[in-house]
Length: 281
Image 1: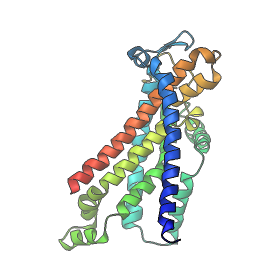
Image 2: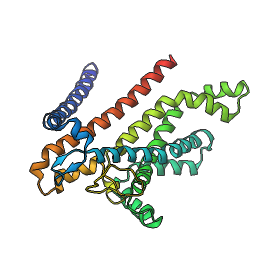
Image 3: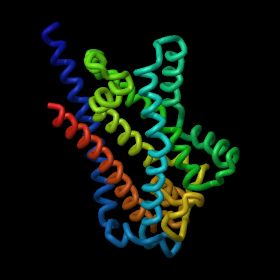
Image 4: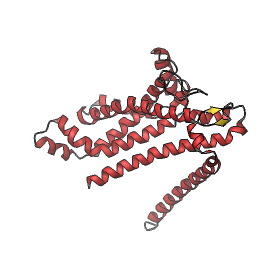
């Protein structure tokens, strides 16, 4: 029986992996086969027209890009700084354990709750109104727990002997962290950041209450105004449009573009990890 156990475990793992890959292939095949005919330069570079039954998705693409940039500006510096403090400076006590538990619990909060919180805090409390900046701040709060967790995990993988060696040659703790620890943990940090931002780019619920609009007649340019985004545009075309059958090809095209954006961000994360891992050898 002990000899059969490894084969059973590997067989179960391969079966589960194959099942997931099969359904992923089916979904991607359906999206590509129905969305690819809609993809063209006009579709990517023009604005919607004729009641969104014709034209392109340029305002949605622009809004998604700007939203991701604002999210990164809000979440990345604070998330990385918080992780560095918790892992490198904070003493292991009941308070830090509670803080870590709260951070991990925040990672499990449904995204729509962040949307309602962003509505109460940024839109109404701070009088930012429904705008691109309000949505970006909301997604920034949503992304913070993930960035803190992934950054802290990357820092923990650096051996304590590396820090001790830097201190032994006369470096201060700050210099040790800046010049030794962070460069060594950079692949893991950047991978976590990019994957978190790719997740944020596909969120719909948090931005529904804070700034996204059904239709804007121009590409997003003013961060204090409402904007269009790819996930919400897809949601509206697929469920709320008055001529769903007419715009169904456009919905599939929008879904394919969104998948491509997320896929490119994920590839960027893997490339960053591969490049830095190769340089460290």
